[in-house]
Length: 68
Ligand SMILES: [Zn+2]
Image (cartoon, rainbow, N blue to C red):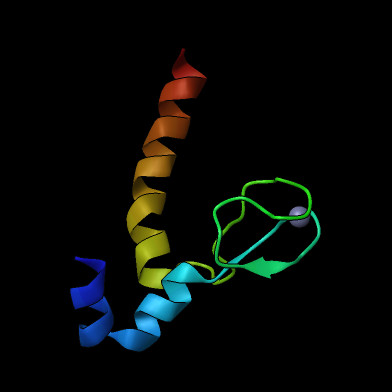
C-alpha cells in the first residue's frame, strides 16, 4: 500500500516519512529518536484548512471540559 502511495505522490510521501525529534531537533525517518529515544514528530505543521477543521472540534471539547 505504501509502495502505491509513493508512486502516486512521492513528494508528499517523503514529507510524511521525515520526522524530527522534539528533544534534540535531529531529523530521522524513525518513530523514535535514535539518540534520546523520544517520540519524533512531523516537522511540517498542519495546513490551515486542516487546523481550522479540527479547531472546531477542539473548541467543542474545551467547552465540554469546562462544563465538567
Ligand atoms: Zn532526540
